[in-house]
Length: 149
Length: 373
Image 1 (tube, helix red, strand yellow):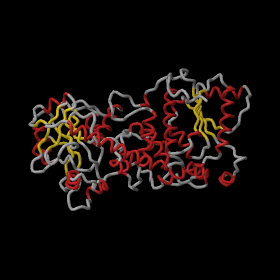
Image 2 (cartoon, chains in turn brown, purple):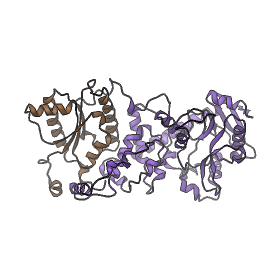
Image 3 (tube, one colour):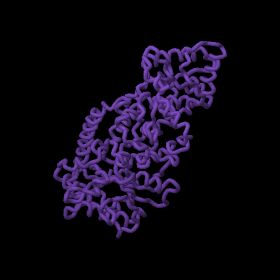
Image 4 (cartoon, chains in turn orange, yellow):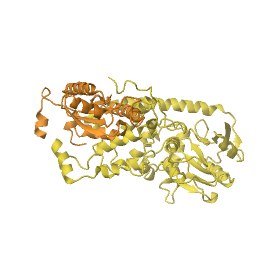
């Protein structure tokens, strides 16, 4: 598997995206995309979390350092959080993480936060298409080839 | 603000400040004093909690910060604050850290009288204990100071060289060297009602000209801001995974930096928790992803994760760097990160206990572009 990964060319590169989706909105949105048979790229590996506010920056960093080409965090729209204000906290945390990644020049463009509700199956599929394309353009994460982290 | 001075007798700065501290302790206004004092070996000055004025032989100039004074005050006040006032002699970075710990509910200022001392900078603990000059570190520093020379600069910790503000803020009483002719006098200022009450009963003389300190402080802050800007510019190149991984290459994931950090207060740190315990097959699986896997694992994850958790409260005391067994110059990364992150949230750690830590509050109408296309 590792040999394969080393040799891949940019054009046939399939981005690996780790997606943290909140149980109440974005995960249900992804579910709706599936049950509605909407097609979207299979690049995202979904991990269900109870709230976008429960996604510690460490989860995102871990995914990036392990070689994920992109990390997606999905939460309820502002004002709609099942736990009232988890997504507002997630938003601040994302601002902080992006700031730190920016300071260290660690490609903050690979980390996305989006609000997707339970009824937005189409938006989920569109967002996944958009992100897969954006990450494909960025190319493989340079972190992926570093084993000395 | 009350301006008073301690007259320096026989050019003995440390002795004269000790007379002041002994008077303060004997006055009964405070029941004990936490102040840096050289240990019997004279090799190192530690914060010592002194209740008997006769045993006080402090050295408030001693250019050393062996451990976080803020953490010590947290330990002394977290379970139950003292019932009568205790004086704590602190440098500006440690006062800032203490204010942050109060916001994090890890310390109380009840019956704590903060005596802030102007800080010219400190040497690494090992430089202090094995000081290469003929004089003691304190003598060397005082002489450099009176000569207005920068010969002590080369010994300073890197955090001190680019210190944000060596002048104490949020102190009840300030012992000021800047703006004073320290061969003759040391400035004493009361910055709170508590401080005023304490000072009015002590044998101090009135300051003759009050303006010299303000000017000196302003000049010092400008000079420090310039040095800081140069430092930040220099470190801008430290970007990208190649440089970042090289920078942290020597990290053995020992967590000493976190242990020394005044802000990292968690009893059980996430990075010490069982989250990082794993079965052998999981290690192997991770090796298989890249074909090989550096151990001890997750050192960079720890560094970046810790940074995410504490950087908004980072007071840039540099104790993390001093604690590093492999001499990683952590401030090169932590100061630029703190500068940028704190600017983003318009937050100054250590400014005011009434302010909230940015990560526990939010506004509905902020960062609207984040999360939207």
